Image (cartoon, rainbow, N blue to C red; front, side, top):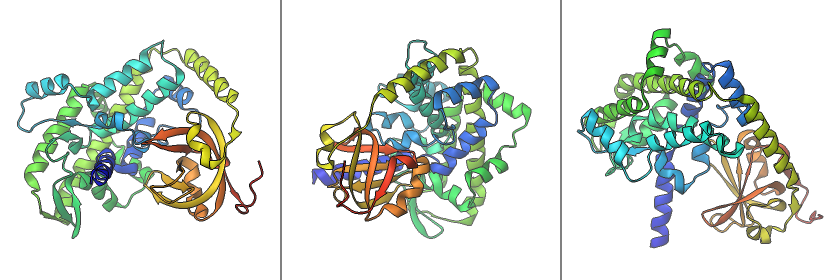
Length: 377
């Protein structure tokens, strides 16, 4: 019973984390990219290399890290005044999205933090700014930010959190690039105002919107076209505001940063990575080589499409696989070709909930082999 309960909790955590969905988060990042200063653009490129902030917008969801789970949202009781709300956010003993953004800002500003730490901090900030603009990421603890409030939307079962994460966005039927073209219409005065608003103001706005949304949709509500038409404008505005504000935040963070110093740290980090030569490890022994860069081989036993990434199982079906391979970025294009195939994969072995995992973003790190017999090293 305990095993099934834990599985339910982990699955529910995954639902809560995916604010705005992949398309929404990428739209926020792509809008931000269009409003970065040249200094900020250079700093971002130095930290992310060949990736853009659009590419990494959902990274904080994809890593599925229990430790950072509370950093995606804030729980607060309804009915608070502005001053009460601020005190609630600041005084909470647990981590929340407000504290997480401040902490990652400090990492980016510090001259003592490594290239890798700065890179992660940037990825978290890009994602968390999107998160906090989703109203149900600043909402009640007792219903898990609307996850426990079941409703029907267009005659299909869902919950308030999922409805605002992606269902309303999905109904538009737009790609992120199309959403950017539609939403990036802020006037200079709006940009100035939104970027001058404090971080606390951004969160307070979501809290106020969530308060109204709770009152409008009760458990069991049947929602459809009228609800969509009434609320899609709020979704669009919050995504647009998130993008504009993310740009303002990054412009400010990188305004006085010495890009030359960032580049020096990046070169040093790259040199260290190159020193880690991948060595062949039998799949059955993969769990003994955590934090090592390896090459291994095995038969694909199944895959799960999680939206912004695909999980591929080697050496057994989930949950008995010997290795999980997460396909992100360009490597996702290989997913459908791999089912039932014998493959080799190269990458760093990490631990995810007691299971070894390799995250792959480059197509070149995976090869489809003729058969299981071609096991030469």
